[in-house]
Image (cartoon, rainbow, N blue to C red; front, side, top):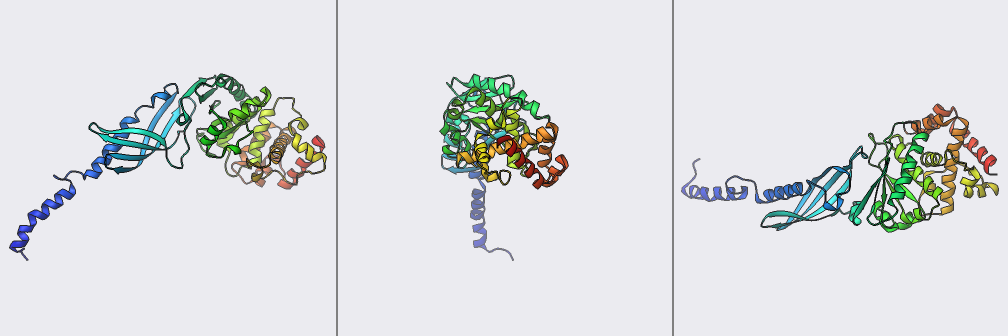
Length: 372
C-alpha cells in the first residue's frame, strides 16, 4: 500500500534523524570516533619507554588497550604493558596499567600511567631506577643505592654455581631487583611487609612455562644487608636456582623438593655440615622429635613461626642432600625433572626405585644419624 501524503512528508525528517544517529554523512558515531582517537593516542605515546627508563635495556615495549572509559574531555584506559629486558627475558614481562588521558585542542594526551587496580606495580613506579650490568646478571635498583654493584658481583658468582648443580639447559643469567626498602619490596610482590621480614630475597615468576618466563629475584634490602658474606652467597644461589629450574617446575613438583633442591645447590661444594646448616631441626631431633613426614606445602608459608619455617627448609635440604649422596647428583636432577611431569610416587620409583614410605624412612634415618 502506498504511503499517504502525511507519511510522505514525514520521510525526509525520519531520514535526517537516521543520518544524525549514524553520524552525519554515514561516518562513524562520534563516541566510536573519540574512542578510536583515544586508542591512537595511547599507541603514539607508548612508542617509546618513558625517559626515566633510558638506562634500561628494553625491547618490545608496547601497550595493548583492553578498555576505554570516556567522560567528556577525559578518558581512562586499561591496558596491558608488555616488554622484555634485552638478553634476559625469553618471554614478556609487564602487567596491567591504567592510563589517564585528557583532550585539548591538539587531541588526546596521556597524563598519567599507573598500575591498574589490583595489578602489581613495576619497580620504576616507586621512583627512578638505576641499572648495573654484570657478566651474568642485570641488577635494577632504586637510584642512589650504593650496593647494586656488589649485588651484581654476587649474582655473577651464583650463576655458575647453579649451572654446576642443575645440568639442564637454562638461560644462565638472572635479573635482580633491589627496591628501596622492605615496604617497597612487599609492594612489588603484593603482600604485607611482615611476610618478608628477615628474608634475604625471593623469586617471582610463573611455574611450568616454556620458554622460561621473565623471572625476577627480588632482594629484601634490610634482610640482605643483615646477612654475612656467606649468607648473601647462599641466598642468591638459592634464588638463582629457582630461576634455572623454573621450566621443570610444575604444580606436581613437591614444594619441599623445589626449596630443598635450591638449598642443596647453594650449599653444594661448601664445607657446611648437616648440623651447621640445619640447627633448628637438629635441636628437635636431639630431643627426640623426629619429623613424621617430609615438609608439606603449608610448612613453607611466610609469616608464621620462624623456627618451624627453618625446620621445613632444613629438612627439605637434607632430603635432597640424601638423594645426591646416596644415588648421585644426576639422580637428584632426574627426580626433580620427573616430579614436574609425573605423580610423586611414579617419579620416585622411576628415579630411585623406591616408594614414598621407604624414602621417608630413609630420610628419617639420615636425620637421626646426622643430627642426633
